[in-house]
Image (cartoon, rainbow, N blue to C red; front, side, top):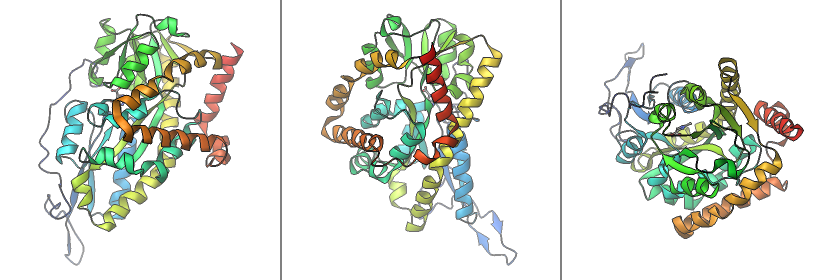
Length: 384
Ligand code: 6CS
């Protein structure tokens, strides 16, 4: 693991080799030739990741690159920049906004750039079924909602897909089962006000820190707790400096896959369609990827440490749920009418799916690994 000592390895690198817009994206020299000597001009799309190799975002990026390359007959190459190569998290967002890279992921830290994106940090809004959530968020009714597109568009960004990466799991040096257990705990949250409000409501002391600094923050005792999907607790070695992993299923980690808007607007219809087709194909794929990575990494964690796993019961979860509800009003106050409409649209979609109006993943639940493990986790909690 390369970043645990907190330094953002290799600051901002030169991105001049990336294509910038459709008219002259052949930034690299022709690289291949057909036997008839017809040259194919290769265009490069730079894609900034908030995570390192081996992560959910990296696997998504790899598959996206492969599919785009195939669909464009080799004309487009997607170059991935894993976390650390472009600087810190906000450097990634700055670079996609400025067009130095064409594509990027943005999650919790993006709240400073697109305040409405803090919607994805709200607790207890989605269903308990991760696959269904991935489908709801990527249903065109939400993914292409005019308020979502406008919120990103105002910041020169184009939302392309919403990517849930697994449950946000708390880590700490004590078992947390009630809000009282959070009392005075310095828990790291990504830099957005909504998360600070949420964890203050739970009784904790939210503290913001860059992703690459968390390992040393916990090792040095500046932080008592952390919130990550399981795969990240493992791949960033965070679990090695914490005693408990606590599963409250209060929220999933959700990233938005986005493009630079000016660049996106300048793409041909053919390339826009190619992106659309690809992100739709990747909806079930990323669910499989995240459930596989999170399941495998939990096994690695338990094999390599004495960390204790705590699964909250439905009653224990309810205490946190209750405290999270007023934070929805804070979200509405913070982001205004457009954000509130968007939140309500999401809540309506969730309610419709739960009431059975639209339950696209019902028939696939049986083959859904994480769903099964979610259920067994909750059975375990009920039995406790
Ligand atoms: O906690 C964070 O800051 C980071 N965690 C993950 C799993 N992905 C990117 C994000 O920035």
